[in-house]
Image 1 (tube, rainbow, N blue to C red):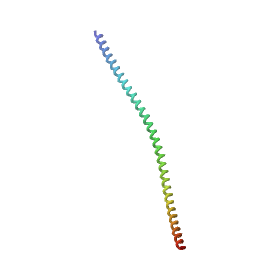
Image 2 (cartoon, one colour):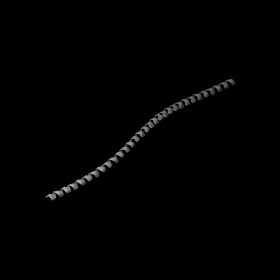
Image 3 (spheres, rainbow, N blue to C red):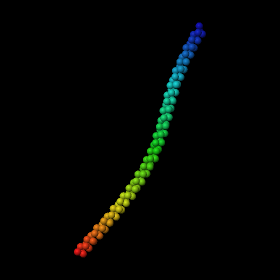
Length: 113
């Protein structure tokens, strides 16, 4: 009878261990699935980050190209403004010379009359 009670106690403990083991395995599977999901998410984030970093690099390079173009255009603007000022000065000198010549011709014409 003692053996029967011990046997029944052992069987009950075995059932408890088996239930505990199944519960632990179920928790393990759940955590493993969560870990796999997190790993896939992390991989996606790494891919997105890599793509974003590449895009940032491309944008920086494009920005540098645009800055170089702006500097080039500013230099061209300065050159054209200087050319405009020279042309204006030359035009003013020529206009003044023609006005003086016109005045002299008018004076000569008046003398001839």
